[in-house]
Image (tube, rainbow, N blue to C red; front, side, top):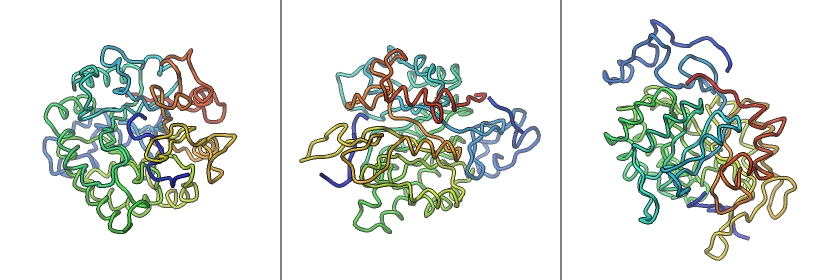
Amino acid sequence: MMSDKLSRRQILRLGGGLAIGAVGTTSLWSGSSLNQPSLAISTNFGQPAFFTRGANLHNPYGIKVVLKGINLPLLDDWGFPQSNTLAELEKTGANAVRIQWYKDYGAQSRPAYSVADLDKFLSECRKLSIIPILYLNDLTCQADPNLLNSQLLPWWTSDSVVSVLKKHERYLIINLANELGHYRWSSNKDEALANFVNAYTIAIAGIRKHLRVPIAIDAPDCGTSIEVFPKIAQTLIAADPLHNLLFSGHAYWASYDGMPYFQAAINANIPMFFGEIANKQDEEVNGATQYCYYNIDVPSRRKANSFNYQSLLTYLQSRDIGWLAWSWWKDNCSSRQITLNGTMSGLTPYGKDIVDNRIYGLKSTAKRVTL
């Protein structure tokens, strides 16, 4: 049995409330606070985008939002852009969808896609009242966080992409890089973490020249090392002129359990959610990926600890912390799919639990808000 390093897929894989910063108030969103006159806003309709205050996320009208949804590997479903399964996903009750995108997919045989297709899909999200969380999958689990700025930031800040993202800015969250950077897996943790903070500080500054949306930052080590958040969150929040960041953990904890680190993150008042939770975890064995190698559901077997996703979701429900399940479809581990065919009629046993569980299921707990 290998260590937990690279122990998962790397390729596939309404309430009411008081509006904060409402009419006549510019607060932290004013053009002067950004030193970017082009980002100055009209205050007639609340805030210009979703925003964080303390540990909580709010919609532009100040209503608290707890993200509850599903990951959609949109570009690994080679039916896109001719078709997608968002209308079926909407039936789960999810209030958010984490959307897989690539700067460069690198496969000539797949259907061509463009930022115009992204524009259309984001419009569909709004029509269905599902919060879109857009992420780039190109650098999944790679060690060097500086690749964020050399390879991905030029895409995020290109004129064509910015034009589309600004159109959907009011209800969009961007997740700059999927699972980029190492910490536990580094030979020098302090140096690795300093590089991580520096890379994201540069990237945040680049994004804020154009966009006001919340920026989600994945934990290092394939998203698993949430213990870094109390060490770095306030530094990065302070580096953002809008203080509008989210921190995302991925709970692939078959041989490394992140549960003991929760309390420190809660005590630090960090705006945190889980960008990926799942019932199965992959492993590298003799240089090849073994899909569904670990069970991280109940009953548990073939793993080094007692962690399971059901206990995690029960805990998150008690703390009002959001999460998104991996994945709707398609995945190399079919048992880890919510659905076998992209429809509600094809829900797997795992999918039925994610959707229908009375304690934490999407139908019971997800609340949609005005987009």
